[in-house]
Amino acid sequence: MYFKEEHHLFRQSLRAFLDKEVMPHIDQWEKQGYVDRSIWKKLGDMGFLGIDYAEEYGGSASDFMYTAILFEEVSRCNSGGFAGVVVSDVGLSMPYIRNFGNDELKKEYLTKSVAGDIYGCLAITEPNAGSNVAGIRTKAVRDGDHYIVNGSKTYITGGVHSDYIVAAVRTGDEGSSGISLLVIDRELEGVSAKTLDKMGFHASDTAEIFFDNVKVPASKLIGDENMGFYYIMQNFALERLAMALCWQASCEDAIAYTLQFMNDREAFGRPINKFQVLRHRIAQLASEVERIKIFNYNVARAYGDGEMVTKECAMAKLMATELGDRVMTECLQCFGGAGYMEEYKIARMFRDSRVGRIAGGSSEIMCELIAKMTVDAVGY
Image (cartoon, rainbow, N blue to C red; front, side, top):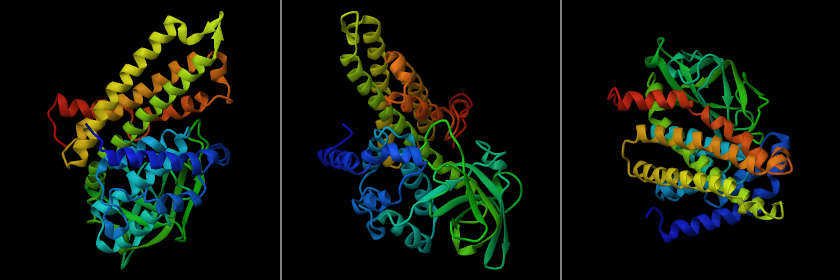
């Protein structure tokens, strides 16, 4: 209904690659706090970073459902941090350049990104501006052929080791009409970053980024000046859909892992998967995950067809991340004391899942956005 034979073959190829090139290194990346750079080139060489990008930039020009598969499969690697940096590159930073950048920016950044030679991060959130994008303060003042950028960003996935930053900056008046997007190269003087210590997503180098009189060429402006807010609003749909697909896949992975444990663990002389209370708990969770998956696939297909699915992407993100939090809690409970031990990967799944209800727009923001479009009939 959603995937052709070619999609299934792609999923098998991607999963085999992840099993060989990623899974053996996950624990090390979790300990060191970042993903080794070498994996980007390997992903690029296999064509996984440019699946739905134009062939002129090295992509495959395939339909969006291939990218949906990518988001799902990287989320089955038992590392929210690894999935996070991949999605941050493919689903957050690169799309702004593809959708709104000029030919020069596309040739300079997309070609190298698709090849895995470089990767980027998206920097919108600030210490005093999260979901309120219109409240950002990072300033970019035009000075001849350059912008002078001052300010800071926080909670930026891939914020330490990425090669370039797609940053939201204030180039005009206060409010939504004065925001622009700039591509800021990491190597520029005045750019610095500090790794943040997190509860989960340990393989993601989540950072606070500082801009101190950074001189950015005006040619690095994405689209038109002072149009950044509207570009951000348009791309939020993809970010939220990506998160929905990631959390959906994580839920499936957690349930499969829990079922394996329940089959092996015995209590009172029989496997615990024979106890009705646990069986029914899994049955309920599996049913809800399947329902979310079908909804997500419908939204993903509509998004790929170019339909306006702003509301549906918000719904998908809300439902998938809320369910993800509950699935991890209930699955961990099935492990008993073992679930609290780092020896079992359900502990990491539990930690990593919690950020879903916060990142990319909190559940409260999703509810308000959905309410505006449903109750107030506001269009976006």
